[in-house]
Length: 222
Image (cartoon, rainbow, N blue to C red; front, side, top):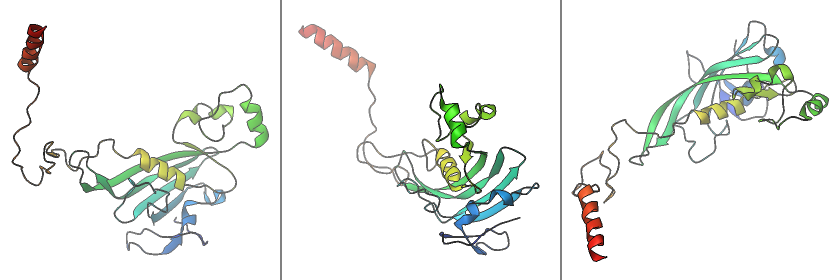
């Protein structure tokens, strides 16, 4: 089932195969109540802009909204969240420095654990290393806390936007290319070689004979 609740937060639109967008809902869709996660699970679908998800850095650019679908399952602990985020990212090619559209499909996975209360945390923190996240889970899940997909929550609601934001950032390629055979820029005049060839002579690589002649010349002048 798909759930949306009213509130004063920025509006989103419910994703539907019949119409896109269809029904106006709110960012509360990504802030579901724990009690709404029934034994058979809870499905959430919406669209959001990068800005609504907190993706505000200059490199975080998107063409249109991002479609999000999540399935939440709660069987004791933890709450497991799986799903996908789809859209189109605008990236800069590392070779030719031009912007290009990059289809974005991110597989989402996270486990949410309830944050221990202050008394439990105080006892756990004694003689222990500083946790990677803001709070440390109890001993049975200490090992799982080392995994990046483990998140902690407080109260009666989950905040899913930070998890989605983090996993979108982790999905950014280290060396984005507009195409695999991108020719890049001419190192002499800066012409984009994907558009046309320039009149610059081919770049000459270092010659081992030139290096040898240079060493001999230095030796003769000594």
